[in-house]
Image 1: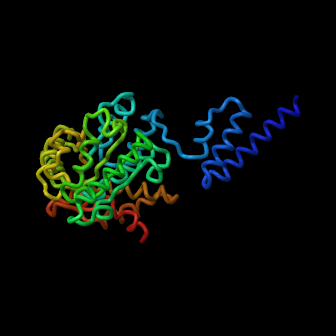
Image 2: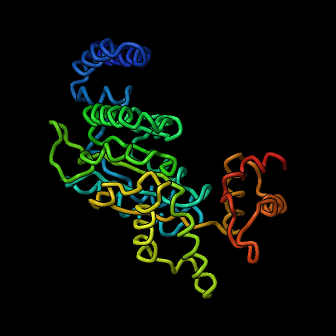
Image 3: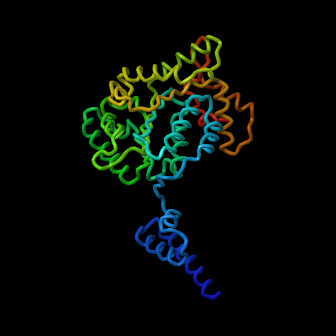
Amino acid sequence: MRQVARLGRGAVLGLLLAVHAVAAFEPITVGIAIGAATALTGYLSYTDLYCRFAECCREKQPLNASALKLELEEKLFGQHLATEVILKALTGFKNNKNPKKPLTLSLHGWAGTGKNFVSQIVAEHLHSKGLRSNFVHLFVSTLHFPHEQQIKLYQDQLQGWIRGNVSACASSVFIFDEMDKLHPGVIDAIKPFLDYYEQVDGVSYRKAIFIFLSNAGGDLITKIALDFWRAGRKREDIQLKDLEPVLSVGVFNNKHSGLWHSGLIDRNLIDYFIPFLPLEYRHVKMCVRAEMRARGSAIDEDIVTRVADEMTFFPKSEKIYSDKGCKTVQSRLDFH
């Protein structure tokens, strides 16, 4: 009996190694090997075993809200509103077993304030491979939708891409970068998918997540942040209600927002307009330290100060906010 048990364990190990070797090449072979291993072990389900070697769409996997909160607080600087709203929005949505519509977030602010960075963090917490996942899809306006005369083609393609990917994985994530460079009308093609429909042509989109990234509204956000600063109030005193109504109206009326006169706003299909505040000198220094740690370098405060001092700040009279946020920190640090 002991010899049989040892033989069984050895066979399982061999099959699992075989699965690992062929996982990237032959899904059918993987399935056969896993089925055999499952029969021998008797306690691992086919799905559990398969998903150890291939990426699976885990629609019911809970969000680790504590880990997301910790990463946002440790890595995202100067964005108390974004941290709070994104955490609450994702936690509430993922905890809802029967959402009435997809979660739609629109992130706004100047370049270098953290919008792309946050979208990467969010993607990694929803699907472990992040932007490399088969279930996370990134669209860049200037790359995927460059020509104004082909708007109808882009609308048809976009609907097909989203329909196909949500059919394959209900909890798919779609990120639209450079929304301010998207030709008006393109994004309205996905309006039926963001609405309160149980299904559209037999497909439910209610568990999908859509994230828009845009520089549009950066001027409105900066104006309010400056008003608070000039009034002697802390930036942490700024609340979502101070910015969200101004942002939604401003973006709706901005011909260069990608959401100009969009039905997505008109129909209230965007759940949150999330402002990213302009970054101050102290935040730039935080970015430099974070980049040093990421490179495995010791924190040298002299270098931190020199890199921060090389950045340009606005308004000219007060020089409070970095005009590029933290966008050029990596390249500037290379020179030190």
